[in-house]
Image (cartoon, rainbow, N blue to C red; front, side, top):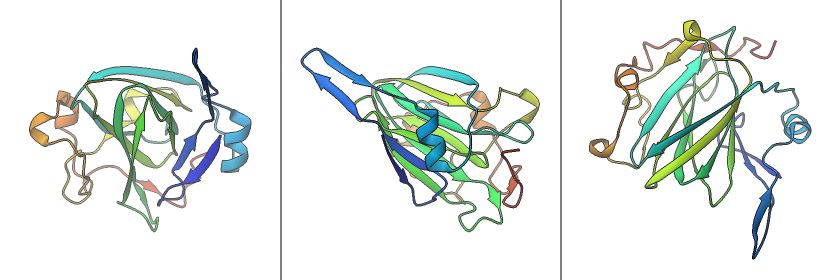
Length: 190
């Protein structure tokens, strides 16, 4: 596995080593010891989630507030997405900025998104199976979101808005300015 910090250095791209031959492939998708050695702290993943979507489905931007804030380790099993992480830590030098990474079943690339970030993705392929780990259980009372199309964020989702498919929840999310944020000085891993 190789680990690469993104333009927002707390977000990390993970490229696993793929062992392939005429029979198919084998890939180690997660190693706690290697991830934690790279990050410098423990990430106690406790829940795995999976979704199936078709072209243009946009899920996000989602996050949970403390005490149930979540880190995510996301990947695509089949298909391709544009995966987006937005820094929502007030006081951070990258507050309000985002990183976008293409993840696919073909490239096997993963993205680690720490607590203090909003997350979303849009499906670029005909269909997609998306899987991720989280380090805190789902908490409805701490569940929050941000409008995917907020001009203040100016995210290039690649897919034209007319072709996007969103849930009722995601069409009613607040603007970035009106959303709940984290504080960069807050220790989110205690």
